[in-house]
Amino acid sequence: MKSPRILLLAVLTLGGLAPTLRAAAIPSIADAGDYSASFDTQYNSLTVEKVGSVVELRARSRRGEFLESAVDLKDPLTMQVAYTRTLYAAVFFQPNPQRALIIGLGGAGFHRLFAATYPDAVLQTAELDPKVFELCQTALDFKPTDKTPVALMDGRMFVKRDTAKYDWIILDAFRGGYVPPHLKTEDFYRECAARLTDQGVFISNLHQGTELYFSDIKTIMAVFPQVVLFNPPESGNVIAFAVNYKTPVITDSAKWGAPGTLGKVFGGKLDLVKVRTEHIPLPAKDLVDAKVLTDDFAPVEFLDTVKTNNTAPNK
Image 1 (tube, rainbow, N blue to C red):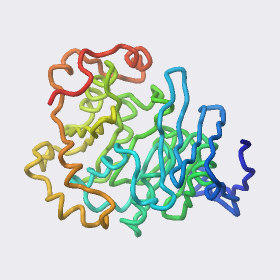
Image 2 (cartoon, helix red, strand yellow):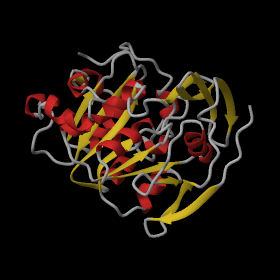
Image 3 (cartoon, rainbow, N blue to C red):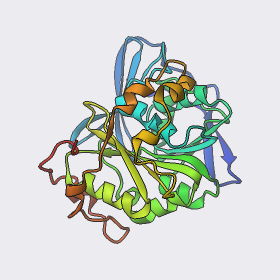
Image 4 (tube, helix red, strand yellow):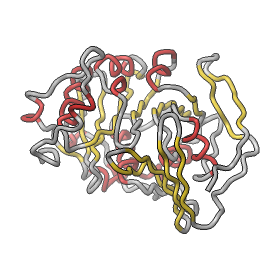
């Protein structure tokens, strides 16, 4: 199946920082019957598959095929991928985001609930691959607005050039289970930390199962004085939440707000009580020998092939 032709309107945002693209009269294939289509780009090998009302966006690599995002077109506010629900544990630490940045668009499963829950907030996206943005609109029926702009550029470059402060910064830039090394370093995390508001939260989607996982955590801890982990069940993901401050303490879950109360803002589309149970301790013993990744030392691909003895964090 060939990719549908689209028309894109380029709009400069953030004072000319980066081209932000929005759809203009884009013909949609979201209402088509079941199908599977593949696309190769400069950055990705992508598969879009629609079965019934659910559309999945997957990335292919030599390591296999990885689910990037999924959306139920009949119920777009209910997130289909477990770890995207866990990203919202950020409300335990900053419950009222006014401006958020997410690096990696995927299928915008996260974006729809954010826009519905925080209609006055801005969710800025940095996405490297124009094809991902195209498919997100045409196949997964994402409709970007002034509140959910998408800048087509490298996430680190966006953070470097940006001057805004964010309540949430979310790093979710996987390509087929692989994250570019320059988005994994202490140097980059310090750049992100500088873009946070005083009570802002840095959020990173990590993969378990290799030595890279422990280096990821140790590198984040080298920048942020407090780090909290959540492990979505049966996902292979761990979501790290980190803040710039030492007080108030966020590592003591007894001091978090009541999930039942905090979760009311999601209108029944997110079970924050269940998300709360995914909190796990730091894997302290495994961090002792882990290496901190820097711009000068970031053997991400090597570490990502070295299997750990533990397939899940210490519990």
